[in-house]
Length: 335
Image 1: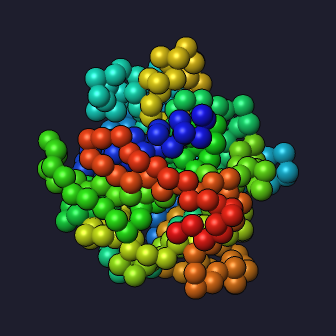
Image 2 (image 1 turned 180 degrees about the vertical axis):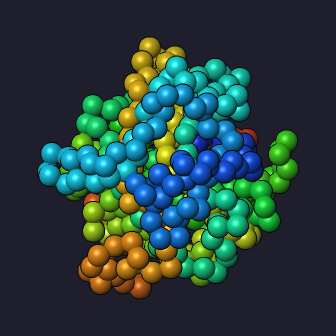
């Protein structure tokens, strides 16, 4: 039951994001930009990020930079901590989406258009995060980072995303199959999506510093590889762009479907999430030490490791998705 609920929330997150993706972007103030560059950002992301216009309004304590935070294993990082409260509400197009107050809120950092990745480029991305053990996401979702697909200049589809969903962690990304449909925002692209439901027994994903590395070929004959703490967890070969021309990288907590939780009597906790070592680069060595140990885990075919299940959800605009369990781990190469 929990797995079905998680898949439903993830798919609705994908649909709602592409329906209402915001094309507006705000520059950081000089001091904030300097602090993000010093404490958080690396390589091509350094001094080249901004705020989506639909972030919650700034208040004292919403985010704070730190020189040192040590986890129980003795790993220490500098970075930024976001403290998102339910009482912060959110932009009207998030908070009251679908006419349901309390639906979604976000505080993200994103690339401006000129720094997004172009079709045909191969990029590496790194994200370090710390989620406290006590944080729960029962019947709702927190996207820790995601990509949006750009068609010309507008965002018209969701790309890969990493989610803390209904107390589980999921890596989701588009298959090569998609449909086009029109709504109030114009033509939108609806992809069939893969959900890799990650096994936290294979590797803990909260209560410690977790470091993710992603390698993407943003091309028709592309690929998408995910490592978590140096272990390959998902490797996919296929079309990464469809008709898109660029891909935008975003990080920071974006939580949604909170109304489903509150309607069930669940109190939404404050989301206190730390980030460190976030960046984009042309080469792995700019972001990670010991890259050969990572690339040696790759082969010329798809792989999945340390997952509970892999599910394919087929997109049907304005209708409930049809999802199919692809039989992992009995089927070790489900895509």
